[in-house]
Length: 584
Image (cartoon, rainbow, N blue to C red; front, side):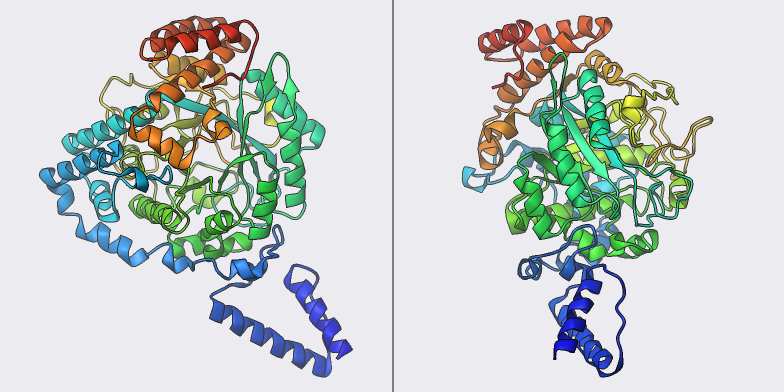
C-alpha cells in the first residue's frame, strides 16, 4: 500500500506537469487502473485534464468550483448560429425589415422600455442573434442599407459615449510561449525571435517612458511559458502600480491580457487590488478552425479557453473583456458567437463583458496564417461588423488597436469605437528603446466623406499584405505608428475628446448605479467633464505646443455642452494650479 501510495503521489505530480513517472509490475497495472478511473470520472463530469487540473502556468486548486462551471457546449451554439446566418439572407435584402431591426436597436439603447429593476449591470442586448445575423448579411456594397446601419450605430454611440475616446497603451512583459498559434510571432516554433522578459528595473523604465508620454492606462501582456510564471506576473503588477515619474506621472488603471487562469489564480489576481479589466480573446469561436490554428500547447483546449470568463466570474472578477481575431473564420459567425458568449455571461452571472475587441489579423514573423489569413475581412465588411456590434451591445466598450491604419481608425470612430490604443509597441522593451517606425500608409480621407469611400468591398487580402519596407517586429505588425501626441491632436481636430478617465471604477459608479444614470441620460454630465479634466492634465504636463493650442479651444467649446460648468471650472483651475487626479 505504501508503494502504491507513493506512485499515486508521483502520478499526480506528473499530471500537474512534472517529469514522466516510471512504473513497474503490479504497481504499474494498479496505477493504470486509477488513471482509467480518473479519465472516466472526468468524462462523466465533462472535464478535460486541463479543466480539472489547470495548466502548467496556472494550477487549479479548487476542483469543486471548477466542476460547477457550465459546459462549453452551453456557451456557444454553432448550429443556431449557422441557421441564423442562412435563414436571414432574404431578410437582409428587405429594406423595411432591416429598418425595423435598426429602429428596435435604437429604442433598446435608450432604455425607454426597460424598467429600473432590470438594470442590474451595464450589459444591454440591443439585438438578438437573428437580428444581428440579418444585419451582418447586408450586402456590403449596398450603400443605402449600409449608410442606415452606420447612422444608427453612430446615433447609439453618440447618445452613450458622446465624442469621448479613451486612450491606453499595451505593455509586453515577456515573449516566451509554449503554444503554437499559427498566426502569432510568439509561437514556440518561431526560432527567429529573440526571447526575453523585462526585469523589474526595465519595467520601471518602460512605465516611466509611457507616463512621460501622458499615458494613465496600461494593458499588461505576456505569453504562456513556465519561464515567466504567474507569480512573476503578480509581482510585476505591484511594480507597475508603484511607478511615479515627473512631472505628475502615475498609472491609474491596469488592465491585463494574460493566459487563461484557474479559479484559484483568478482569486489571487483579484486580491492584488490593482486590476481593472481581465481580457482574453477566444481568437476564433469556430471549434474546427480553433483546433487547426492551435495545434499544440495548453491553448489548444477550446473548452478550457472558452470557460475562462466563467472561472473569472466565479472567482469574483466581473470586469472582463472578450474578443475574436477576425480573419481566421467567417466574420459573421465570430460576431454572433461573441454575442452568445456575452449573453451567457449576463444570464449566468449578471455581468456581461465590459469590453469587446475587434482585431483584424496582421502579418507576424514565422506565422503562416497571419501572412495569408484563411478568411480575410474586407474593409467594408469590417466597418459593418463594428456597426452591428455597436447596435448589439450598446453599453459595452469597444476597443480598437493600432493594427488598423490611421484612415481606418478614423472611420471606425464614427461607428462605435470607444477605446483605442495609442503609440503602441508589441515587442518587449520597445518603449524605453525609443523605436518609432515611420508611418506606413497615408492619413486617408476626411471623416466627413462617406465611410465607404476608398475601401475594398471584396474579400481579398489587400489589407493584410506586408507593406513594402515594413519590418515584422513584436507579436504582430502594426499599421498606425503615430505617437500618443499625434493621435491626441488628430482626435481633437476630428471633433473628439481624448480621455484617460478612471473615475467610475474608483467611486463605484458601475453596474446598477451606472445604468440608473444611463437611463436618465445623465452619463454625459459625469463622463464628459471627467474626460475634460484628464485632457487638461495632459495639456499641462505632456502636450506639444500645437496640440496644446487645439486642446485649449476644444476644452472651452465642450464646456458649453455641460450643465455643471461652474464646478468644472473650479476643478480645471485647480489642475492649472498644480493639483492632479480630480474628478466628479
